[in-house]
Length: 187
Length: 273
Ligand SMILES: C[S@@+](CC[C@H](N)C(=O)[O-])C[C@H]1O[C@@H](n2cnc3c(N)ncnc32)[C@H](O)[C@@H]1O
Image (cartoon, rainbow over all chains, first blue to last red; front, side, top):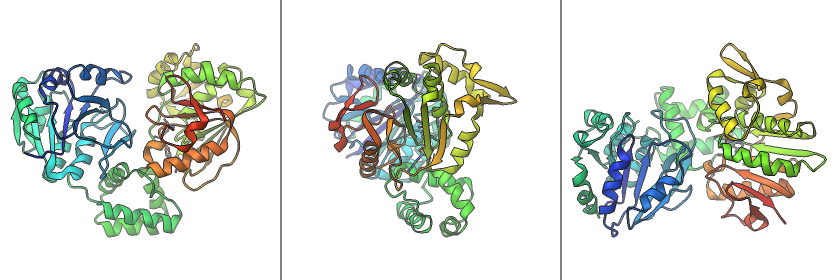
């Protein structure tokens, strides 16, 4: 895909290591926002943006409610809220029930982004131990977006990308080494 | 859910029906969450078509009740965000404790877990007798549940942990008695809570308060409605009173901000002029 308007990365157990390896290699010139939804324990809030911002030249920040979503910024979903995307390309936060035992749920962000960015959306699902993200990938596909997964072979916990592979027509399966180039070429 | 079953225009139609038929105004709510909830309900209830859905909501007042209950988010906890309750316990309530009387407004109280938490704090600070908590919500169903003061026993482990993290020193289980699968909170905690309906969109200020809490409600409103509701809180708050919002909410964008000073690290502001 060219002229991507948003890249959303979802991950659970075993995904942080992937981010730590991939983010440093992402070009500071990318022309789309990168939105990251990672399952984690509550209360560890500001730690993740801090950790990741040490690894990239791009600006990293926690997504705030009503904030306009801008290209070239890495946004992190805050812990314990679902992160939703509004039609006017701003964020909303939502404290509704957990989905797949998770809040933030990857599904909630993939699904609301799907209609907003349609065929300019890329959803990338990483390592993890539950099936969160699978329904979201389906929705993204049905709006013309692109579904990409980490190669289950390379994942610390293969279950999540495996489930996606089983239930969704995946466009690309990437090893960790191939991710930076794939992302840089989306601009 | 793949393609959403109810699209944006249909959501708008439903919202204008609600306003026209029942006087409930959801037009200032953030759309992504509303649409997600509406679609969830639509699939859950296996409604055969949009026309039927619309008709049911407009004509069947029982279904309308269900609709409102389902599209608003009622999730809550006791002592949620323990650090926030520490600030209430150590800073806010002791200062209010020097007043002869403390009136507290808890807006968007949902099923009451927050109200009982505050009641516990007041009791431990020996302030309960001279306090009154007005706990309000637009949804009558959650208020009924709140008034019962019974919560699932399954949650007590988590709530007790929150309580301890917030600085609580007592045995949390002394505040309730277990009845089958439920924890029934002590009557004395309830005496000073008044549960009643109040819609932040359409109802006015109804008293003057020294502390107003409204947590995790504004995230569901668009900026215009947030402005309006913050003005309502400002009107209802005494000078030197406190306004408390949810962890991800702020007054920074609003006109009232210049009259308030924020307490360090918490989403609590004091009205200074
Ligand atoms: C997520 S709950 C928050 C509960 C609690 N304050 C907390 O933070 O845990 C949101 C509550 O706001 C209520 N609410 C939504 N719109 C409202 C309105 N216009 N007026 C009053 N309450 C409203 C809902 O019914 C729901 O009970």
